[in-house]
Image 1 (cartoon, rainbow, N blue to C red):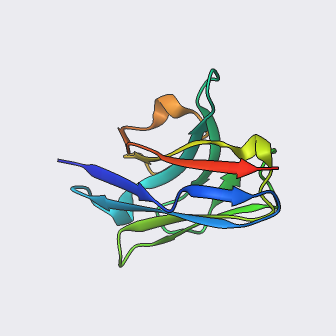
Image 2 (image 1 turned 60 degrees about the vertical axis):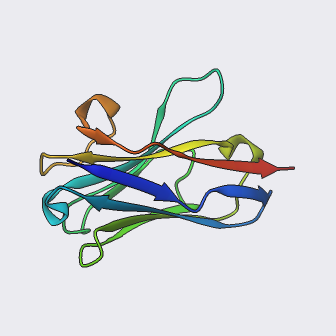
Length: 124
């Protein structure tokens, strides 16, 4: 049974930083592409970042490029999202996702497993 458990969410002031973690179990983590998505109230879930199984390839949504960094530690079965210079529009529930294929993707339909999400609220 695959489980993805996010942590690290909370309340942060605009301009601040936060690091999200996602611990995976029940899958061969080192072979999985990982992604972060987010969903704000009343909006569709959207792509944030993705990372290849080895960590050598990453991709970001334009809205977070230069501010967020995705990384992974295959020894710990964990993927991270470092968020800097946060803005009120970054407020959302953040979801970790895993994809069984080797290629990265920004399409949520390409991901096979999802976590329950962690809330990030950025105050102005």
